[in-house]
Length: 326
Image (cartoon, rainbow, N blue to C red; front, side, top):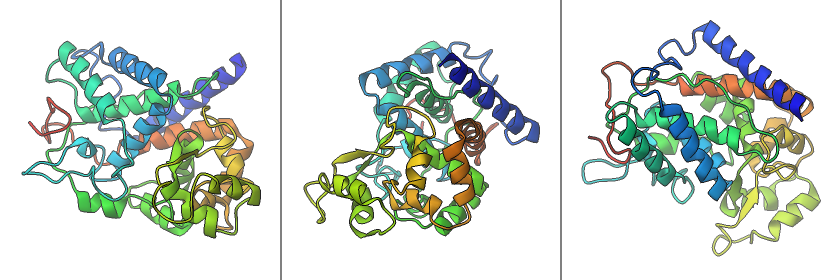
C-alpha cells in the first residue's frame, strides 16, 4: 500500500511540473496567499476533512461543484451565487437544480477563512482548494491524489443561468458532444477522459441514468437489471434514488471507473460513450490498464480546468459572502 501511495504522489508531482513548465497556470501561483493568509490551506483542509467524515459523498460533490463553476464563465465562483432581485444565479439551471450540493460546506470554510484573513481570499480559490482536498480525502484506505493548486482567482459579480444550461455536458451526451464541449474550454480529449474519471467516486440520481438502464443496448444485462430495481421506468417517485457511479470501488479514487466502462458497466450514457467505438476509446482503455497514468493525467487536467478564464488582478472582487456580490 505504501508503494501505491508513493506512486500516486510521484504521478501527481510529475503532472504539476508538466503543467507549470508549459505555462498553463502562468496567471496563477500556488504561493499567492503565502504572505497574506498563511493558514488558508490548513483551514480548507480541516473544513473538508470534517465534511467528508460526516458524509463521505461530499468530496465528490465539491469536486462536481468546481467543475460546474469552471465550465460557466470560468473558475470565478459564479455557481455559488444565490438568486436575488438583482441577479439570476446558476443554481436553478437545468444541470444544477436538485443536483449540485455542498454550498454550505464552502460557506463554512469561507467564514473560517474570513475570521483568519478578512477580505483576502476569494470564494473561487476556496472552491478550487476544497475540490483538491475532496479528491484526496474521499478515498477509503488509500488516499487520492493531491497537487499544488495555482491560486489568485477573484470572484465574479455576475452569473449566467443561460450559459449553465448550454455549456455543461449532460448525462445523455455523445462522445462527439463531450469532445466539443471540452474543446470549447481549451481542454483536449485526454483531459475529457481524465476528468470523467472523477466518476470513480460519487453517485448519480435515477433521473440521470434511467434512459441508460432501460434504453441502451451497450450495457451489461445484469448491471442494468440491478439498477432498474431502484429506478422505475416512469419519472416520479424514484427520481432521487442514488446509485454509485463506480460500482467496482465506489469509495476509492482509482481507475475502477474505467474498468467498469470497458466492461459496459458505465452508469450514465455519457460514461459509456468513452468506450463505444469513438475517438477516445484508446485513452479509456489505457486508464483501465494503468491507474498511475490516470492519476497523472487527472491532476494535469484539473490544473488546466482550474485555469479556465480566471478573474485576476483588479477584475472582479473578493466576496465577503460567497452567496452574493459585495
